Image (cartoon, rainbow, N blue to C red; front, side):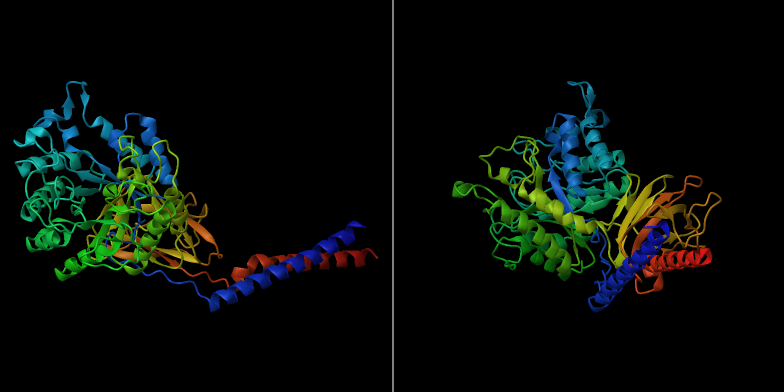
Length: 557
């Protein structure tokens, strides 16, 4: 066959293939019009439009650094974004005053171990929720229980101040105490809501003195129906906390939500312990006017102790591992769909250091074995987090899981007093990426005279709407207004259907404050000619090739 006939045949094939592709695109577009993509509504309560997947960690018990590193790497790979980590006061401040942070026996700083944990978390993009309790013995006269609060609450306030000062910009979330409504967390004494509220008041004041942007989480209350000298039912305790004015001292309500033997949809009942008991706590919040505050989940999950485990040891009841995995993901998905106030779920727990033995029921909560073997729960969570990492058409806050930030960004209150908190950085070179599926994207930014500038690319290319600097880079100058104001800036439009990545980088020539308040993804406009351009272009090229070869052949004749 001659080269001319080959070229003509190639032109015909190109036309046919392009027409088929265009028809397929048109059919998909018409199908999407009959079945439109749901539009994501902005979650307006602060700290709710976040990656909901977190877990509890016990890294203070690890000696080998490689195990700490591998644990966090596996957490990151599973899509977990939040790390609830204990920082026991008794291990950090060995004696009163500043000298107490030095261990003369080991001749080293007591912060060293925790500094490594914090830096490793930053390396893997994990946000730490720091639990602060367990006072050192020198803070009490009665040391029968190491969990008991100090005799002088101001000593705890001093430690909170030192802790927040040291990790300012690295740890932004602080849990003040743990389960004060039960023994032994409040020591050899009766539960005392007034005492805890006073401790919370002092701690929150000192924490905000060290870092005005710190986020305070209340102590999670143990799920219990017991009323005795040593224990107080969680509902009664929370009622009393609100009566005593606790509302003003914390930003997020932290709760425990074990499922016991019941599925996530098991309804709430004051006389029953289950996952949905949180709805009864939420009712108390709303009755006291605390409606615009998020609820995060501290210890959350189902236990998988063996079927032959002694009944007296089944403190959390039991389910099999397949149900544990299914219930965990179902509960999180259900809460995000039905509860606009639900935020982070800290699964109890990710992995332990080897000090919890198989004859203890706590052993059977784990996502990953001591030897780093993933359990079904780990695999199910990893699958569930995949879809969260891209945003479809809708409006989103800055902490939505589709947005990923380098280590230098942190949360700060909106200075205008409304809407979600902002994501802010003042460091040149810090970056953020937003993965989305749509036809365009708008950024919600804080504009003003002190605002900085951002470079922006879409899928590695310069955007089609922003001005360029001298080097041809797309540049977004946030100094758009003369006074602080949240504005929307369209970064890209007319994108073809599919997944896209917006990458933002703080300009290095003028480092200044950059604050993001969220983003909006617009629907793809595939019904336009532009949407079909690759296929239309193929038809045109095929026609040109066929006509050109035919015309050339006739001229030769």
